[in-house]
Image (spheres, helix red, strand yellow):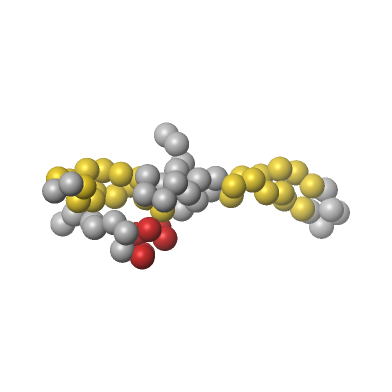
Length: 63
């Protein structure tokens, strides 16, 4: 399953962990993706959406 928002396309970003001893390792910042039942073209469909799209009202949740 791709960790990507189907509305805005937001996905994982790369970053670094930095320890107290300044050891640097690579890490991933995952987007907060939720499975949501949404109204798509008059029908109900399950889509993967980031929480920002949910909060901003870009997705109409199905009842």
